[in-house]
Length: 319
Image (cartoon, rainbow, N blue to C red; front, side):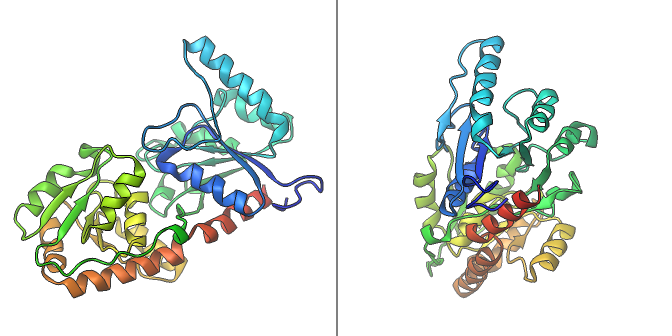
């Protein structure tokens, strides 16, 4: 199943659905289209921070009306789609029917988990994903919950992100952008920075473009202190050439470095160690720049959207 000539009659047709979590599905659809794939993103609703989508279903009304809308969309999309690429553990119609129907109609499917949809869940809650043709997770941390999944990290379009190295200012700006203060450990970030010669900027509730402009001005970035791995926010900041501090599980770091033949440049910290881990970056502008340069190089190797698209097309071809 090649992207340019699926089934020898038309370009490979991929429907990503049904949410645009963190903008990852939209970036994937755009990257696939650049490769000649007939890709579309269909969502249940447009998110305030990531409203991008090709089709948004009108799911207003009660349960019966919502189900009718979803079944109608599935019926329309079925003849237009070779691969259904589901994201965030969600399907267009109830899971118990979704995968059997796809098999009956000879359609391929992928279940692509994005992090919080699987973190901490027992195997029985994730068993539905085994019915898809392939499962994908974004890191060697997430693979703990879906051991048989393919690891394909989130991608970013590096052609759109020019580096903005940290400044030499004596009082650097430490930036933190929590999607949830509780999950990201924001209270500990505030407490740690209070004892340092630095200014803390917390970015919340902004549309991505406006938030990204704030990221460019940062000297140091703190992601999260609870989850054990990094997300798209940290990836974008590393692409900007910023040093990033976050909590990382050691086993996931080891497996990532082994798989990609590189060193993860992120400074790992817990709530208890954050202040001490920030001190060298606050005190030394040269260290900020060195760590930031390593961050950009790492993203070019591990998270470049074009490399990620190659790997995704390979998964589709093996379905």
